[in-house]
Image (cartoon, rainbow, N blue to C red):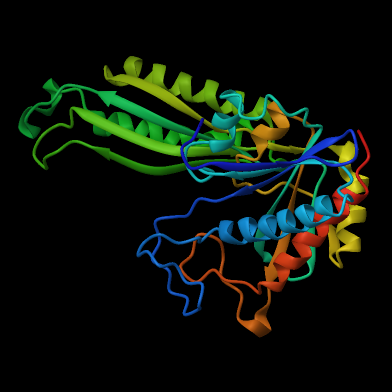
Length: 340
């Protein structure tokens, strides 16, 4: 098994095409505060990103497909992917690289994510980029400590870190197209250990969110130049490292018509989002490495029912009837699938 707790199923149908549906199954280290029968039974382990809903909808669809197969009416071959490690670890990438799907001639991959910022009954779609890439960066600074009374004898990482902070904050303003949505975020930094010494060490980390690979290259190049400038200006060693995260999720325009028709038949109103979301999603690896793919966001917000909290919060909740719409959407896709 490429990842210990991943699961998948394969049902052979009557047609020659093979399509895949994916649900992520992992939770988050959050204490759930919802008072509902399906509340998490483990403290600080909560499906605060709606992955339990994704899994439930896919399980419902699996049962429908099995019933169709038993009746000799399953129109195509179907692979059902229950994928772990979406939040951390890039489970999709690991499964693909381990050859988990090599024996299946998958032609297309479909997936959804609940979206508490879109109203219940709305399906949010977008061709090409729909989510951003997510890349972490870390700066490591090493200087020379001295007593504050002899500060000129030290090489201050505190002063150098201020320079790094200032320069990073200017990347977005001066080096990226202002018409594009990018995030160059500083999440955490520190320098030194004591109040009366010149800091001999410094650290800074953050994340880059962009849906344009060229913009990501610009940001990384500028950060490398910042690191090199620290040595020249402050006589402090500085290294920047990047942890490659998730690439942008790219929705294949060739699948657009099928997606839209299936959503409408599932009684969902289609909203074509003009710009991508700026969070990362490892569904992106399926479209990048496996087959043409399409990812849809299903609205769950309903103020009358009190479903208004966002993802990754302790009160995330939604009407379970939404999941029936998702299963209907999946079934419509299967019944009307056309090779792209």
